[in-house]
Image (cartoon, rainbow, N blue to C red; front, side):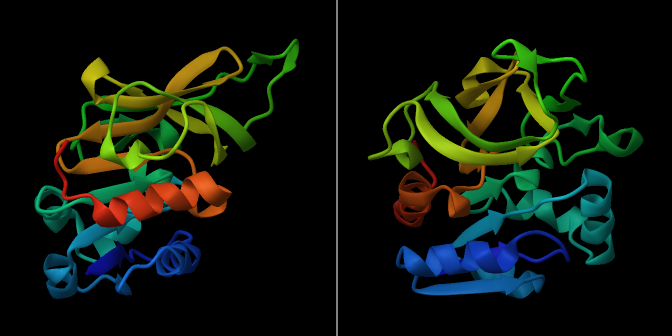
Length: 212
């Protein structure tokens, strides 16, 4: 089985690749070659940083027109910015049109959020619990309210409750920590940095056939 990590010039690509190798992936590629992406058994859409730069790199690598087709063709895991890019629109960088694979928007955390009686720091950087809202194969052997590692200033609001697979609370805001539609599962947190439960999610992805 081959896992292809989409390389569009930014993101924590090597750490994600090493995590997949650790959980038993037969072959892990970090590539922007369309033929290799099409031939892979599973796709991972990782990322970190600003979404405007994300889409600039995607367009420079000639991937934008191909991604919508690729993302519907096999099991897909989105990570962090790879989650946000799947939605219709992001407020970041003056407003950026996303891929529109899942309906919803990416919004910035308010500047004056309260967390435990104190002003919440932006970005959210650290561990938080995820409330599993729907059963999904990628939650197998992961307890509800498990802890995962987050780093983000923007959050996802899904347009449809059916797409919300996991929720998280930060300050006064509840946001989508995981979204799922058909063959796509995407998370705001970093499973490769989330110890046992994060690695279990990656392991579950390797055995997932894209249906649920």
